[in-house]
Image (tube, rainbow, N blue to C red; front, side, top):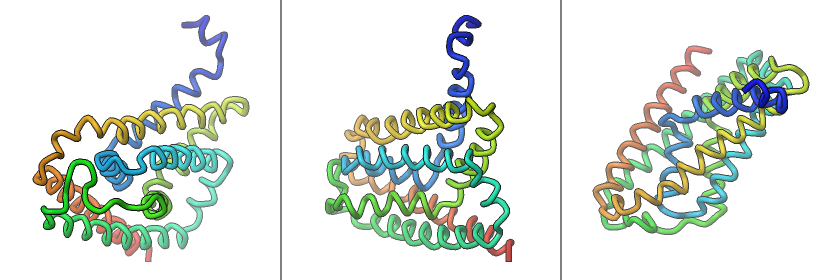
Length: 215
């Protein structure tokens, strides 16, 4: 092990970035629920996975470069992000609960009418930009951790974070196809939409509460 570290002194920073990234994103959340649903629908999943991975790398890199200090100091920006995120998650959650009632349009392959790439990517961007938890995890927490690395290892930390993000979103998106037989039944889609809708609404309520406390 010591020989490996001597040959690759950047390895601890890469491993730390990867493990921290996985530890933060492997949880039930708005973005993960969206990626899972797109994977089950087999709809533009490659573009969604690539975007989510690149977004994580960009946000962690921005945090390491100093954005974490600027964002944490702006209460007004934090409140605005929380309100926008709460509104978006509430709308998406209610739509998921409405989809649950339309049993006849659900199927394992399409999950209803096929969406265009622009529509799907617009939703992916919204789940990233309008989700304050994304900034908390990537920009603030991981950004601060990465900024504490020695000068020559900070971007290796970012690279490790990108590797963790790529691994998770690939498993979540492309691995969802293994669950497709279970979702050949409308009841499974109803359960997924119910869990998604409730998750979004709960997250929306927490964000709204967070924004109100800051007023």
